[in-house]
Image 1 (cartoon, rainbow, N blue to C red):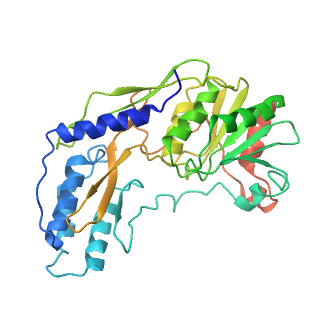
Image 2: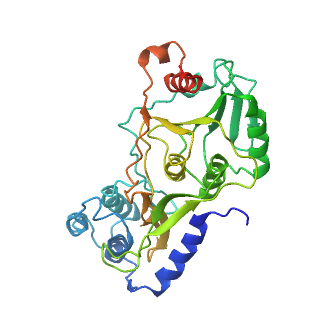
Image 3: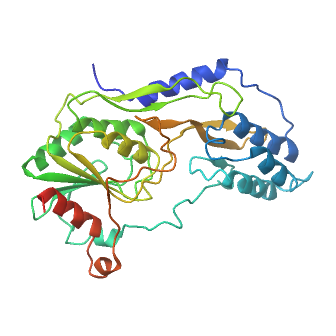
Length: 337
């Protein structure tokens, strides 16, 4: 049986269940109050982390509804809604209008731990790296393989992965760098992770919202990673992460941390584990929000990120010298030093 993304199947389950659950559908007027109230209600009934994040949504709604007035401009209404949604501190929550989109920049106060110009220097990728779909890869001069995957929005196929892993087969070990990878398609994350296990592995659980209460969820559904039927990597692997490793990348790390010969190194991931869902307001604006919580195999939330096995930060001294502290630490680890 070919490997299929469990998330695709779970999303179908979620969509079907949401049409038959007891979450009520109310009609709201297409005016500032109606649009605000429907947005508040959607989050109240369907967002999956209100209690986990200890958010008093009633108080938040009361605070920002005071700023809604009849006949206010779309810009002003959008700004009020933006301020309210910001309290969720969730990069998967976005209100979209034809003129703007809300966003939560949760990385702004975190160490960057990544310098693109250093990565692109001759010390690392240089000009002679190879590229297969969204993967940039190279054999470093100490015979350590290096793969940079900057976004899971870039498609990868089995042929790409076969070629990359075959080329790197002579290496002592490989570094998979997913720093600055803000996520994308979970199918590609699953496909990549499946190359690093020879057995079916339990990597976590997911629930779906099945009622309007903040804790109305289905029973946890297990998530298993199935091994690829194509070429699989059998040697040591280091996955490099930083706080900008978010969403599908967070899920990728959640899977990889459970696999043999894999070490997570760097900084805590950015989180963003809730599977997003989209609804629409009376004025046509769309709201995207986290609807299905994801847990690790120990039933712990991964919404706020995953700690590395080995904590490493970029140092100012190394950056000044054009050295990537994380890559160098991973190389030493794979060489057994």
